[in-house]
Image 1 (tube, rainbow, N blue to C red):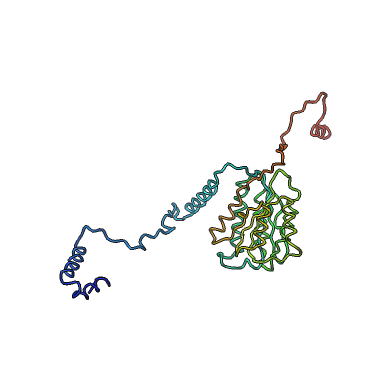
Image 2: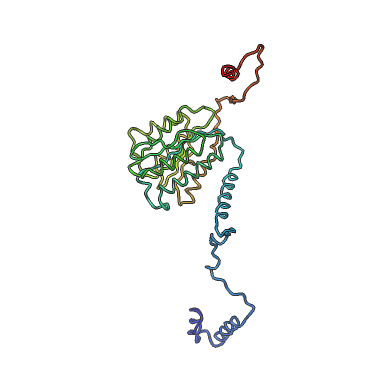
Length: 316
């Protein structure tokens, strides 16, 4: 029986090649089979690198340590990605907008878009305040064509995590999403923020349409006037109005709009928003100093009583 199709063809066509060629072919096959020093040939499927081959279990038999190591490596890669010396904002005011419409019940992202977004939103809040300790955050949801205030503007991550657990997680995804209502509520949140900090809106959009009460382009122009930067992560496909919004609010740069490919890419896009945005310097603006709340020493020329000493005197 021949070892391969080629050998079978050679043996069946012996009249054409002659007995000499046929004998040398058989001798070569025999020498290959009898050579004990020849290295065995590896198949292509044996060289496949599997992601779980490098996972090392801990002392307790779990892979929690390996998972933490992978997350730390991703964080270091994100921090070292941009080595260009640029100026970034230190004090940030960001509104996180979550899509809670019926489009979030899809299971193309496991377990569902809704559950995965809430889990990544909790990770985003923790990472955001770790990277920006003196910044503030607010969370807004949109469902049934309305905007839902999940948490107010504040700098305590525990309040936002509690609000996500109590309000957002208890909401069942339903109805349609309204970009205009959510952006108007975000504008109201950022209206009283000081000018020395950044004004940002980070939107997680899972639908392909928006139910707006008026012209959304007027809202986009208002965002540009208020100097509010918008970043969007799409879960389904690219939407023209979202791309236009990102470009107009970021000076023509549409890199702040991304569409997820899988769960890992979704997390990468969300964690990228924890890095402060680049400060675009305007030639007409002049640098200004920010007054900090440190106390100053004052010496009085005459004796006086403080409120505490007056209270002690009254109680005595």
